[in-house]
Image (cartoon, rainbow, N blue to C red; front, side):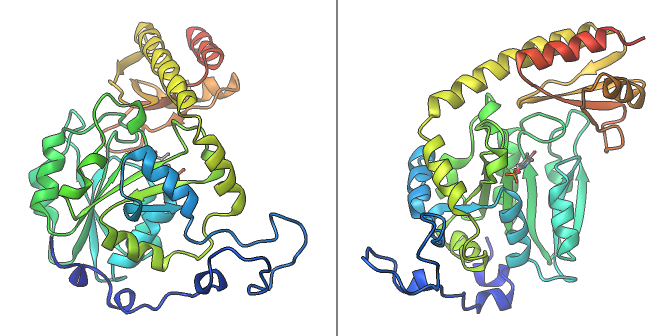
Length: 344
Ligand SMILES: *Cc1c(COP(=O)(O)O)cnc(C)c1O
């Protein structure tokens, strides 16, 4: 990996972060008159902990990662945007990503005026390592990967990801939003082996907390420090921090949901395969299924009439004719299948 000083934007390297009242004094006290807060309306009157100490402590234990390697954001969207802002000089630097993949990388890049060089996945939706590395130039700061990938649903081969981590001297961002549904292992336990690895995870999927907006980035403490310096001081509000602390005690619940959703996915896959207008059901390592049909728009509109909304991905690269079905509750999935059985 290049020295971090060469990867970071110069203005970020020299940035002096905002110092809040709670930065200057963060211990226990009887009377807090330092932040111009209203003394009434507890506990919402107080600014939230800008360091999210309690929540980070809990998440670091849960994930088996050093607390200094944890960044928490307002969804994964926040670390995605921050990564562009700290590493990429607008109009100068670029990133390499895959196609198809999650749309937020391109949007965050566009907002920051950073070019994205997209490299098509192979026909079986795997990484084309050689082409990805060939797309890298002197101004390439990051490679964005997503495994299991959205919308294709599959995990990438571990050795291909390793080859990119070893073969690229910039930052490799690995979005593991769906890892809790996957049979393969997360790269988190190997964080210490790869100083250029940033793993993204989220509480929006398996944990069922999309509404709380809580995303995570895990990386070497040097990278985490920079992200923390650039974020809004109070990026996680008090309600999110309190509720997440409470919900994270319920690991068992999450595991039960995942087991149930994986059962449901299997059922849904076999039901979809029985439908004659479904040409192909792609194998999934996540909580959604990609399926190909000859008339995606028609099937989509048919389901809308039945008040069922899926995602039309047919205009996405390598996904011609494809629809994406999120695995819902048993009742929801039954409604979907019953509706689809009435098509044509
Ligand atoms: C859903 C999803 C996320 C989650 O984003 P949040 O901002 O944490 O809700 C991240 N990455 C991918 C690929 C996703 O599909």
